[in-house]
Image (cartoon, rainbow, N blue to C red; front, top):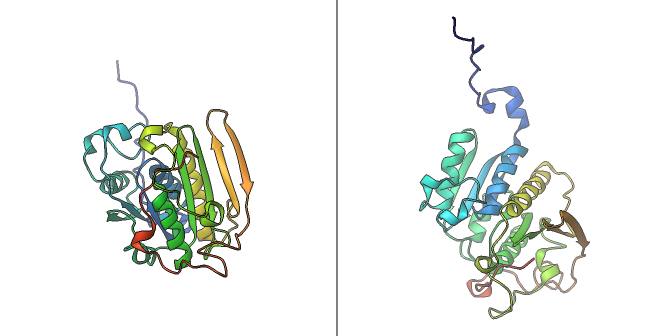
Length: 268
């Protein structure tokens, strides 16, 4: 008996840069992403799906076994690798047409302006409040749009900051809480695996809107997502006339190393 036919062999996948349709689908512009964890992995995949082909990654952490259930671009054989290098290796295998620039280390007051100078949009996927305030201030002062997100436990939040602010993250949250504030750390609170993926995908969609000159969905709106109830609500907010970084009377005119001390991530 003759073996069953397997049918014609599938054609190998083509690099979309080599076709007119692929080139036309790419979104011009470069996105810098702080964090290559749960939010970052979701955002990277969303950016690629949206057609963004130039991505920068900033992170100082390494892949741990406890990350794998939610940080979907890391693999068991890359435990111990720098997360930035792990993501770049994964994307090189799956999406070879994507350009990934790695910036190993933290996003700090010392390097913020330099890093932002090479990108068009900043995505904040960090896990601490100090970095979130720093990302906001650096983006506003550099004239670059920012998409913030946070995920803790079973909930998350997102908001977008237009170039120059008005409104910005600090318009809503104003000041970094004191180090002894009663807020759980990310390690203490944990996070449900799908939550950062959802928020990261929304961040990517917002970044693509900024790059294409479209109206962002979350400027002047804080979106809150509750995965337990599959519930979504948003709270509108306006520019704060007393905002320290984007108002007419702003007193923050540069990011300083002493202004963003460590603080636990928000229980949003």
